[in-house]
Length: 437
Image 1 (tube, rainbow, N blue to C red):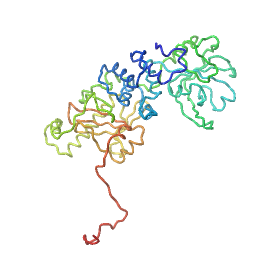
Image 2 (cartoon, one colour):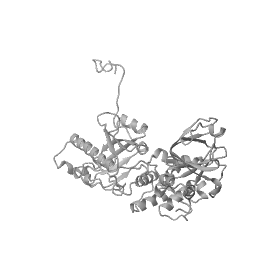
Image 3 (spheres, helix red, strand yellow):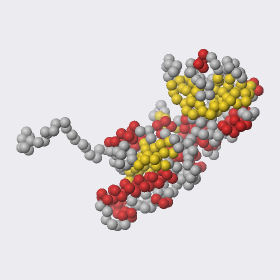
Image 4 (cartoon, rainbow, N blue to C red):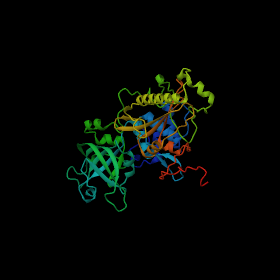
């Protein structure tokens, strides 16, 4: 167990403590006083991938660590901009990384009472729990979010079993509301799996740092064990994290990790692209005209024309992208290539859904065109992802590159053609081409 997450400090973990805890769980030395996000994420990857060739890009590292730990990653919410305009990992992502490493959810004590203060949120006991930013530890429970556990402490105003720990539930989701008004931020936790537990008087269990004036308080896993010592079945039912959707049974993370080989399609490396640094794991080779004939093994030297080559590249890219997505536990739910919806394929995994646009690139350098519809969907659809398959017509050197919207939007771009139109139907119909010049 960690030397950081103990009974005393469980109530006051900040981003720095979380980062150090994540570093320790990855096998690092906690005695280091200054740790950057890159330090911690790199430690996780070196342990998981047994490779020291890790580049120092936070977006890239966060995506790979999340992939390796099989947790959801959304760059728009899991990465933050500091006051110095620097990118950093959010507290929420740090907490999910720690949960996955320890396989133990975060636990919070929430006070329950029937009085004017609790009635403000209009809660149903065991179903919802409202709170605002004046409540201690609101940041911790909001950042921990789905999968966290809530132990209900019945205050002296509770209808029964007063001053006891008597209820248990799991957080399904937490949403910000505006019910109380007055400029105070307010949240509501939506709960599931609520159950009454054998009441244990608060004065019979010692939880260092416990403050009964706090409406919400984080506690350690050891304290959670003490509370449920008389209800072992409840402890067994709630003792494992359930934040992320289950992967399919045939998904093997050791075989299909972020740098896994997918030999049947020649995909030897899977990497997210970042616009901020070079690919140190697999450096891209600038495209040259000679490379085109050298990469054309798939054509069997039959002299494909450009149109035929482009069609072959498109078909093969979709085939490879589909195989890669399936290898990651995703299932094809819809082929949208002829629907004009701004993406080619729709995949699902549990409750998650992705809209995938596929680009087949015959060269090594990543360069592609997007239609106006694809560009619009990229900027507005939170489920959009683009898979660019480079060297797509080469049976050995083709590679899958996963690009997320925040990366695509930041790439250099230029117009390759223009469309002109007018509302006047008679423009340009003058019989004398010299007239009016």
